Image 1 (cartoon, one colour):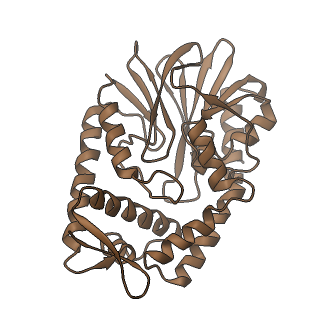
Image 2 (cartoon, rainbow, N blue to C red):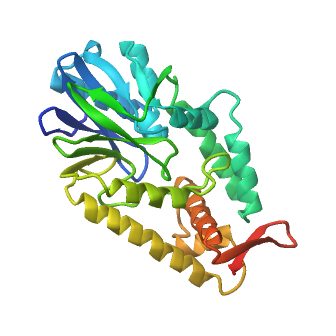
Image 3 (cartoon, rainbow, N blue to C red):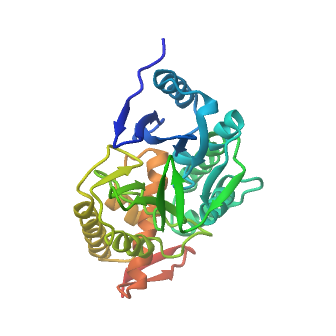
Length: 326
């Protein structure tokens, strides 16, 4: 017997489907946008057996077939959003849309002959992480390739408009959480498909990744300030449920990161590696999955403090980078 899948109708043409994830987030929101030419599928989820079973159940309950999917649209390249895009393309022959920047990052992280795993390992070593933990992270990093395979043939979104269902939505490109992340705004109804850029209850992870944005926290905060200009009555996020406190949530996220920056400065009573800072700020009992994100977020904050001239980075006698107050 198939497990129950939570689906919810929003507005005139949106269906939210909770697709399960094998981590603490529990599910990702996929959206179907109903139109006269079929359905637009936004962010189909990660390629796992549970996700496929959830899709079969949901489509059966909604009386939708693969032939009813006219296009797949991705907010960004992270596996929990991008992972099933290629599988759906095989089943439906539908085009898959994402920004060129997001697709470039998908290939950097998950493409053939990718070097991201080795680059991340070198970065973590340089910032003081133990070799045994780095080995676990390397294995974990490479495990995601299965979760995004097969990968889709992609058509690039332009930063203008896109038709989702029968309505034209503005493409709003943001950065920080994921380079080339796309939100979609419908001005007349004041609806925003916010992806992972603005989440209602949790803070989107802001990670420094080698070869990507050199200033991810600055990019994220600038993107949030840009998003404040949009008049939004309801936002449809990538995680948790649609919400109406859009402006307040953006203000909360900006405050959260300013407070986190202060916390990192307060830690630097003596020079510390990023790994030491990470363990001091985040729970030391994190899973490997959580630790990778915590470490990358720590680096994003330390880099921002260095950009602001509040800390400086130096190499110690062990060849590791340490941070100290400027």
